[in-house]
Length: 90
Image (cartoon, rainbow, N blue to C red; front, side, top):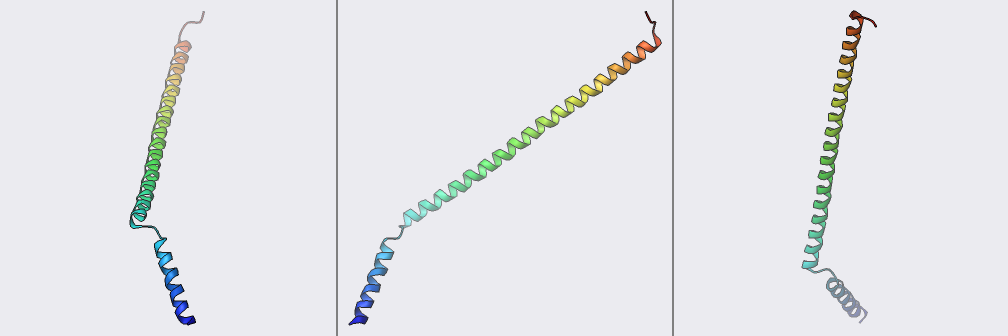
């Protein structure tokens, strides 16, 4: 008798366990949410990389402009120095 009751109890617990599990639609919905989340993270990552590259390009342009300004300033200073050396002094 104990054996029969044990088998019935195990069967009842098995049925209850299977019945309480997620349905196929719930599993698919969870998987879709997971994939959407992964896609959002990837998009955010790509946007961040693009923003960093754009910022680096702006910084490089600014550095080039500063170097050009230094070179122009040095050229003007050299030109003024050469002009005043050979010219009249008042």
